[in-house]
Image (cartoon, rainbow, N blue to C red; front, side):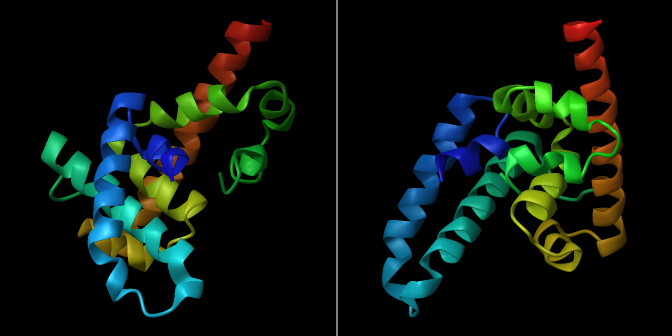
Length: 155
């Protein structure tokens, strides 16, 4: 769950704060869980919600105009397979973390956590179309940032 928090956070300190709050929520509400088989999904949802609440408090993100496993990220970012294969997972994570907050949230929720655009829209208080737009923008920005990283690293 800490790695989930880290994907949403800007830094390790924020990830640890989100992680701590998430586990407090889990322990406070564990008795409400009726299906033990759903524990993983239930916990993931709590941690994603805690990450969103954290940034809502930090940035005033109330309305939005706006791993998958990281080794499979090339499926979601076109034409950069050889670049991705040469990059370390922590480099890719840092590139994702440098996305603008709203794009990062939608990217993580859709690509990594598997939420639908409608679920994301409901959680963030936006339309499904806005969620799709943020995902598109995140992918384009990731492509750009990965190419820039490749130029810096490999010429």
